[in-house]
Length: 229
Length: 305
Image (cartoon, rainbow over all chains, first blue to last red; front, side, top):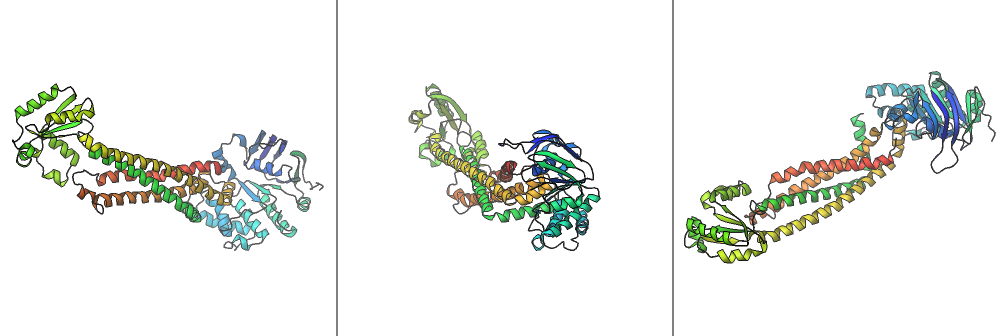
């Protein structure tokens, strides 16, 4: 699903690489936590998967494709098979919940009939059934993140990338979000989640990848957070 | 891609940026109106030049039958074949003359028809009302006076005209105005393009949230750019339509009504509606494509995949 071979990333005008010689593989259906302090390279790792950046050395394969060889105009095609969730939700404030979810389908040219069918379905799945016509601003943080997850999942991606999805949420709400992500993972979707939330990592007992100053320092099946502040 | 979705995005974009959109429309309208105006002015000049303008310097008009009755210069009657031969022979002997062309009444009628077409004046004319003439090209165009003194007042000669001398001042004025119009047009065009580029950037910046989300969910580059490009194209097209309306109104008020030059200067051949209509598609196409291209290039930097 994801393969990094000796990947390094140096940003222009910076001497210290953001990622240094990282090699790893994520299999289909896995749930992976990505941990590390700020500046350890987590975001760069995710941006490389999304092909928002290209790596400086090595090779990144996502969904069987070598991203270095993927031409610019094929990138959108690749991204349609990924779902993304962020700490700040990234919802459109002037569109309703339903429209926000439908947006992900509109931009890839789904028919209106399909959209009308799949939007309530996926909202039910994330536990927001019947809230289609609410505006994002009227919802709690946890509910907004559910909308974002619904949008990420509505096109049934093979891979879901989550960048600190619980970073803005209280512990209780976070647990709800994690249960939702776990459920999505059980449908066969691979989930890669960057997080700082020790409790969640310790509770879930999934694979943990730890980065430190751009290096891969730990790759542990059924691991714990283990990182000391 | 769904048209309705794209259209609503365009509407939102144009309204959000109303003042800037207005500036784009006005500058596109102005520059294209000047562009059309300068094209029409060139047309007007070439229409006025007629058949002989670029070919000769001086024309000797010979008396015809009707001149013999009305024109004191022709009091001795219409030109005779002897007189014609004499004039031709004298012209051939003169050193300043480069070429001499004889224009018969039938040829004169034909050229007149070509120039003035079916104007009321032209349709009432017959070939024998036309004048025979010698059309002379001089080695040195300034030596017009030599011909004038030699032939003015001679029997059978109605008049000697330095047509080029008369018209050149007018044409120089028109040409000068034309170049001024082109210079202003070029400036306005640059202003219009910079405004478009800026508008598109502001527009892209104010919608970076949407476009960011579109990128994440896998919208193609074209799909993300299309609303911006079409916004620019729509604003440009409105400007182009205004420019067309301006040209049509200008021709209407300057030539037909209002200033009504066609009545006041009935001897001048004015450009017709066909000349105006011929340029409208060009102006509309420019108004559509130019902003679209400007937007496209402005976005290449801003909306990367």
